[in-house]
Each structure stands twice: as C-alpha cells, then as structure tokens.
Length: 232
Ligand code: ADP
Ligand code: ADP
Image (cartoon, rainbow, N blue to C red):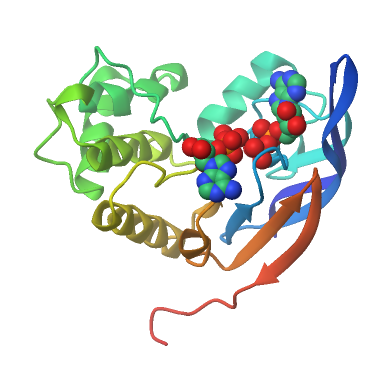
C-alpha cells in the first residue's frame, strides 16, 4: 500500500528564466516506511517536501496522497488534508511564541472541531509521549532547542497523521538531543507512522530504510539500507 505516490512530477518556477525545481520525479513512498531525502542545496528537497505535504501543487504530473489525487485540489481542500493526513516538523520549529507548550500542541486540533478539554487532554498525552510531561506550561523561549523540537514533533503528531514530514529535524541540535529526536522518530515509525526526513547529515539519513538522493531536481539514485527489525 502506498502512502504517497508521485508520477512524472515537475515543478517549474518562472523568475525570468524558468527554473525546474523538480524535473520529472516518480517516487512511491510505501505506507509505514521510513525515507530520507538527501541532496545538495538547491536540488529540490524543500520543493519535494512541499508537494508531499500538500503545501503546494505540481506544475505537471500527479501527486497522490493516501489514495487521493491532490494535484488539482484548491488551497482550502489541501489545508484540511494537511491537518489530518500529514504532520510537519520544520527546522525552525514554527512554534507560536505567545503560546505555551500545551497550547502549541493543541492548536492544530482547533480546525478539526475537537472540544477544548479533549484538545488539552490529547496535547498533554503527546507531550508526555515525547518526554515533556513536566514542561506543558513552559513558553517556547523557556525551552531548550531539543525540547522545542520535541514540542514541534508532538504538535505534528497531535491529529494522528498517517505521514510525518521533517525538514532538517536535527539541524541546530547537539548530538545527545539529536539522538533523542531520532529515537522518537524510530518509535513513531515502529508504531506505523510513515516517516519522511530531509537531511544533509549522512548519519541522520542512515536511520531510515532508504535514502532518496536528489540532484538538480531529479532522483539521482535510491539507496536501500535494509530495515533492521527491533529484534535483530
Ligand atoms: P533548505 O533545505 O531549507 O532548502 P538549504 O538546503 O539551503 O535549505 O540548507 C539547510 C541548512 O543546511 C542550512 O543551515 C545550510 O547552511 C545547511 N547546508 C546547506 N547545504 C549544506 C551541505 N551541503 N552540507 C551541510 N550543510 C548544508
Ligand atoms: P533544496 O531544498 O534542495 O535546497 P529547493 O527545493 O528549495 O532546494 O529549490 C530548488 C530550486 O528551485 C532552487 O534552484 C531554487 O532556487 C528554486 N526555487 C525554490 N523555490 C522557489 C520559488 N518560490 N521561486 C523561484 N524559485 C524557487
């Protein structure tokens, strides 16, 4: 079963000369898989993530998310899909500075018609799952980089999305904190979540089952790492 399928996808930006940010990409991301995307700056990683995450639409080709062709959906239709199907973890965390950890995590459920008490219960549960049960009242500026990243991860997971997309998830983190975040990714992957992680770091990519290498808007090669089960 396929979580995301891209067929002959092109994304062209017209700024004077046309730039083919993605130049004919076909890729299947199986449900429950763990994929890393690598490539030099400008190779199309962010553009690919934006398409998979329904933030943007392709110039040509087809993007199918959870069996649904999303290439032609309106902004509004894609917004509602994003809340439920796809969870995002950005490099810069994108936390609301005036909301505490619990409120930040509860926020995406606002658009899903969940009651206030249920939102808070669910947010607390997710924060406990990422090891921040004792930090729910803290504001983002009262948290360390790794803790903020964990809040962002809890927020990405609060609506129980089928797919989690992470862009440079450990970009600004020290080695120990990065290890904790990657262990959490592995846990969510083991629980059945489809993980897609963009990274420049080889050792981060190696936690995935396969690495998709992008170059100049194309897939240069796909490296299968072979999945190592928890009992191996
Ligand atoms: P994005 O992935 O958002 O398009 P970039 O790929 O330009 O952004 O860079 C993301 C971060 O990784 C930046 O902090 C940048 O300085 C750093 N970076 C960019 N290219 C490389 C590289 N080849 N090796 C290591 N770090 C890089
Ligand atoms: P990466 O994430 O690998 O660094 P991007 O997907 O951000 O690469 O960019 C791929 C190419 O598309 C780059 O040449 C970049 O300059 C171009 N590009 C990205 N976004 C835009 C945009 N909004 N307008 C014009 N060109 C863009």
